[in-house]
Image 1 (cartoon, rainbow, N blue to C red):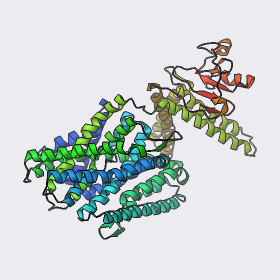
Image 2: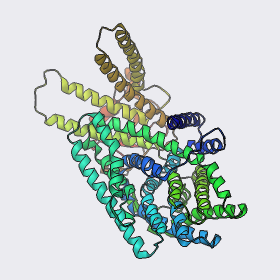
Image 3: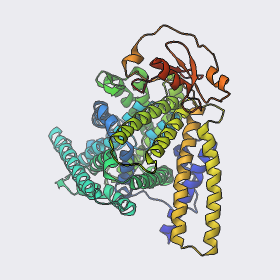
Image 4: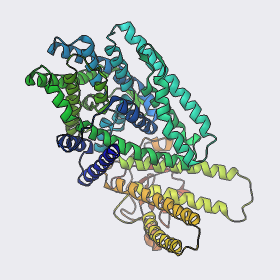
Length: 620
């Protein structure tokens, strides 16, 4: 019962604190740590001891799996050299550097213990950096690199920790252990992916698919850790990451649409609860760790000096590594291979927050190790220090360096362009499909495709005025409320089977959720400061044209003449004719192309500078 009450208390605290943080725009990880520290000093609250097996088996696999499912395998491969240098090279560099500092400050500390604490504090957290990075809008490439690093660096750190604990730090032993960890983890991850992929091709029930998804991270982790030679093990971390990356990448061809939606929702909820709980657990360790460290023979000032020195060493070593290896940090971005600029290296260096894996790994250091309690306090100081020092200042640093955040306007344009081209592929298939159409189904399909594409293009030019899609969304949601009300009345009367009621309500919920998603997307574009343009993809877009003046600035002359309203305005780059977009009733920009064959027009909405080629049907 005590365990159940504790779990309910943890979950309730997490939900309450994160809810308040969202309301007041606060960084929930940092607030949760503070709350945990305060609660740990309340006498009436039972002591919460963070067992390493709970973190390494209970929390780490699902967190890594959830993150790897949503990580782009394409982006991961494009930045593999950067990720490799950080997840392996930097961990080894930090482990050795911290070991030297720790042994210098505490001469009677064995070298094995010194290397152990170095391995403990070496890996940045898989949650902290990316959660804070996304919240403040770091560039996508930086977030991708941080994700990739944090997915793999735990494997390197745990191998180094096991080697140090075994008091065998010979280069040959470390290399053997690392090869076994990497090879075993990679092999098990590939096997798990192959088995799950084969099963999923025959599973269409979303409930069975979700159940299988919950087993995958734990099965992969246990399978890899079961491979061992002496003290060396296969890497469960690597197995989970490999399986998650491959399953996430191939989900569109392995799972049904309903299974994919359900899996995303399930793992989003699980990750939200676990990530938040992790930060609360970090704070809850404070009172006990500090109390145990006081019992050591070292003076308080000496202990503080050790903690501060290791914290500084961790931060400085990462920055030194980032700038020393920047010439090697090439990755693919926008089709070009380029090394990150110095300000990107600085941001990557400063985004090295540690987390719960560091604390859990510290508890793996065997009881009886010289100055073990001080080493635990050092680990806690590094976690709390990096989270607060770097976590609080990272947004300020990003603003000072003026790094570009992901542009919702550019995303909306790319989304509209991709949907347009996908629709063309669908329409090409429809034209080749030879069958009778007595019910006018083809016309209905074309209308739905147009409506979907119009909605995407309207979000590119999001303005304060309601667009046709927004009017449709508002009216349709009001209709759904009325429909749901009628169904609920029918349910209360008890004349219709509950299964039928549930299916109808689910259908209404799915339609409403799609409308809500489109509303949120439009709000993101409207609220963003945008400069919308993407690279041209055809000769018409690349062709240099003499500047032209609009024939009817600020209005569609044809709409004015016909007494119609327009949604957005476009201008022909050949003659300057201004016409309305395809979401407008008149569609005069498209009409102008069909009449004149002038290939390129551009948006003349405020803040937009993208162009559209009618011939190749692509933006630029």
